[in-house]
Image (cartoon, rainbow over all chains, first blue to last red; front, top):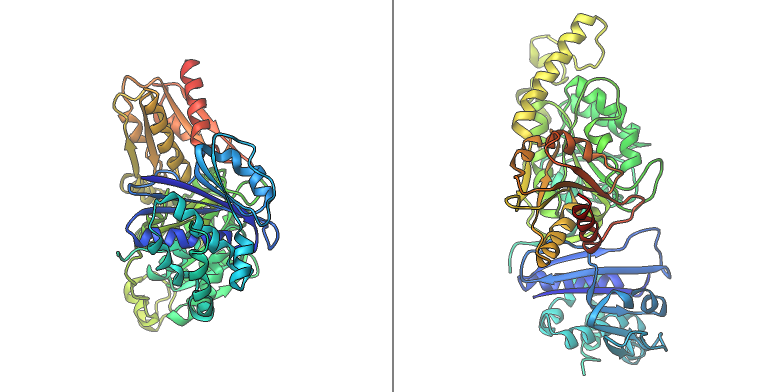
Length: 175
Length: 359
């Protein structure tokens, strides 16, 4: 098993946190993992993306030339990164912010209303967790329990009060 | 569950330096390694060491010179243009025989350049940008665990040879996260124990029967300087025998042999898998030490190899050492990107196939 995921969106959407939660969960499951963020003069509202590779054998290269799954949390991410998907790869589009569909026909596209779902749960900032749950449910390379049990990585200390919300968000779009 | 932790490269480097017993850190922020001074500012004082933000990288390296001469285990870090500012000080440290651990989380150049990863500090690191005959020992990890292990070992090597040791990472290693196992905390040396542990240091003359140690890089008499430089080079000759390190994979029967260090070597490993799928056998020589360069690795390149290809994020700086190692026995070629661009493994494969077809 070697799964290459790419998360993209704008700064402030929790793109890097999605990747870090997943990477931590994979490590705790005893899997090999690498997390590679884009970096630069980035800030809230700028672009943000990260690559996470999860594997049951040592990972030679943290850089990818194709992805098994891409999460596009906004429109620029869809147009820029759908090309990164390998044929039959899975594209997860945040349909709350992206009204168009992918231009490719050789991929599976899932439209996840991440922001609207998060708002209905009480806090739009949980949109990233909604998306993470949707991806894990539809790819199956790691168990949902592993992710659920890792949410405390991000939501502890002063943020512990956000844990119940994110637990709900993780399971909100799994079907 | 293991005792592995998921840490960002820069934070893992800083934590490891503390655990390695580096009690004195002098730094100045620069992307992509600013998390290191940030981490040290937060952690080092409360763990028994001392953090000082210098006014510049020039200040930082000279603070390391002073603290190191007084026997402190010093750690300094920066990124490419900041390391450039430290070159004068590194020459002084080498001449004066002051150990230090230096980390370069390199970015692309020249000049202020850009903040994306680069490997064009190869000459700066291995040849040195300071004046005179000297060498800094340079090690280039390709993954976070190796970086942690090398940073932990660096102060021991620096003390053994009384010479600075540089860890040459890159922006990708500094920013990425990977599970690592952190080493045990090595005790910080108490000031009272320094004269016994490092008898050459300037710790006053009370413990030395009134005799004063001098740590200097100024020798006005040619005979004295000549003798000193010859002694430095006897030390370097010993280091060349003892410190040259590399990994070699799949050289036997390889049609093409890649040479790469740092994250570029990881890229080449994936390229080798892709080439294997196409029936092209490829191997890899990964220098772990860049100075001393592991020239002897190239004696393992066999008769089936048609080309040795240096893969670098520079215009071919390491290729000069590759040519010395290959010594005319095989064609040497370059696959490169600069400016902060990083090729994909597929791009490296395509260029490698084109090289093979052109020979």
